[in-house]
Length: 300
Image (cartoon, rainbow, N blue to C red; front, side):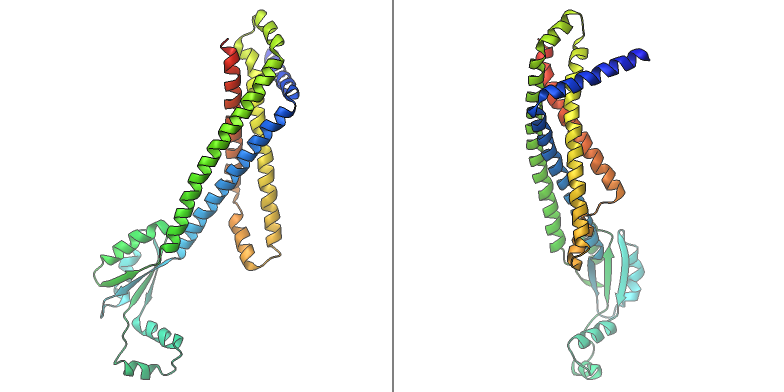
């Protein structure tokens, strides 16, 4: 046990020594990772919010099924309710629809209007709500196949545009994050190589006394991981500060701004996932950069 703590103390001291010798290059590496992780966090939150908006919009999107003349909405209501991903079915009789239409047109004499058109020209309608936006087309297709349904209508343009925006955001974020990951890895690799070169005499002495390559270069690998952890911490602090600021500002603004702020808020599970993702990506990039740096020297 004493030997383990001695080895751990040596690794920590050597890692801190290397970080002190890194100088301004440490800040270059940490700032590059911070920018990478900050943009990654923004893109991840944006994806979550767009998916939430899609689900909310889809659950509020109504599919209108207009029935054939003579078919009553109550006859098909139970059948439609049994369709998968349907959360609510509202039956609208032609009498209710006609009364609402006449009222919207500003006609006070419903009986006279009905007599003038020789009866109620409308048909019964079923208003169907979907569980999410992705289920809407499938529900509409099943409604069209039901006997007694004459026409099915729903507005899917907004949902399609949001889905396309979400997909485009994912691809753009993936490309930007990939480029920044390569940049951060290159900066860390350069930083670790400079630190190794600055300590090459110490490394030569350790090699002469029989130290293994793992024991020699492990502190440098830990330095790369430290860069990633530091960058993740700073990025998380920036994201949390911005989110808190927007929430406090929205409390004093109009309802629309408050709606946007509520959309930007994350639940506790998402907060944990975001922090874990930042820490994991930052550590991975740091380790990759340091491993590439020490590989050149360890193979000599």
